Each structure stands twice: as structure tokens, then as C-alpha cells.
Length: 218
Image 1 (spheres, rainbow, N blue to C red):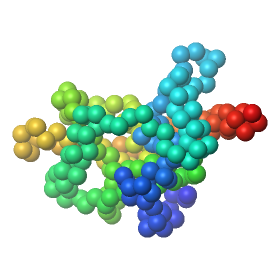
Image 2 (tube, helix red, strand yellow):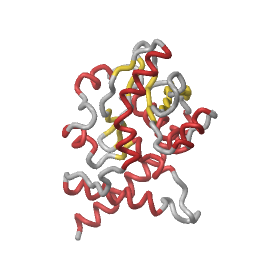
Image 3 (tube, helix red, strand yellow):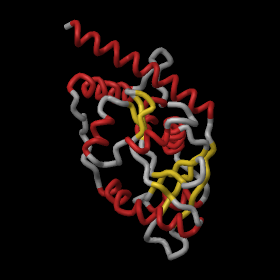
């Protein structure tokens, strides 16, 4: 997908998040939300991928071979909390900034790679990512200007997928006093990190193809 053309067509035809079509599009694809796993370093210099990254690759191999979603995680209190308050966080962001957020679908950069930003800022070349931390200290961390490295990788990956030049990273806690519940930080597109993401994706696809060939030849 080019960084300038084609995105409007994709938005018109892409599946919205959490539906069955959205889940089907993600089957077999490496996604922004798990990109931290592929980018993470292995313990040994002689090994390309960490154990966690290999597990993720194995899951994608299984999905590509079966056409079914491989998921061993049905959510927990923290993820349910985040989902519950995401829309409220976006409304607060719109109220404070005067900006408008458009809901974003799952976007495929290729058949094996895509991402689902939480939104796009209308009239700006920007994605939106929302985090509603269950652990109170994580909200205060964001107030202090600190974003977890795995979130930065996710945001950069979604900028890579969409071609956008920046991301509004929103953190929201409904338990805080009114007027103090939302903070945001603007992350600019980092071409060096995006190059690293793309390099790791090439290696991950090659590893998946190697394993699939073993299965096909068995």
C-alpha cells in the first residue's frame, strides 16, 4: 500500500474491529498489537528469535495451514477494563483537544501483516491509540510522559501499516478526578524503528515458510 494513495479505498472496504470479518482478515497475519514479540531480542546472539517470538510464529503457521484463528487468550479483567472505557477515552480526547476521531478498521499492509489503530484524527495525518490501564501506576507513568516500549512499537507499526506520520497516544483512567482523567502524547513516525519492524517481518515470514514447507513435505 502506498503511503499517500489507496488508503481511502482500504478504509471503505476494510472490516471494522471485533467483527467476524475483522478476525478472519487477521488469520495468519502478524499484527501491530503483537509486534513487540517479533522485535524483542533473543537471549543468545546465535538465535534470531526469542522463545516468545517463535511461539507467535508457530501460531501463525497453524493459522495459515488451517484457516482458523489460534487463540489461547479469552481476556481478563485488565483487557475488559480497557475495552469498556476506550470509547469514553476518545470522547474525552475530542472534548479536550477539539479534534475528531474516526473509527479505524483492520488494515492489511500485505497478506501477512496488518494492524488495527484505535482511530484516525480527522483532518490530520495521524493515528490514535488508546490505553486505559487497569493498574493505577500505569496511568501516573503516562502522566510523567513515559510510554511503555511495547506500546511505542505498536504505535510505530500502525503508522507503518497506515502510512501516517504521527500517533496520538492516549491514556485514560475514569477513576481520576474530572478534568484529570486523560493525557496524551504525540509520537512522530520513526523510520529507523519501522525499518527494524519490516526487517523482522521478512525474517518471520521466512521462518514461517520454512516450517510450512516441512509440513507440506511430510
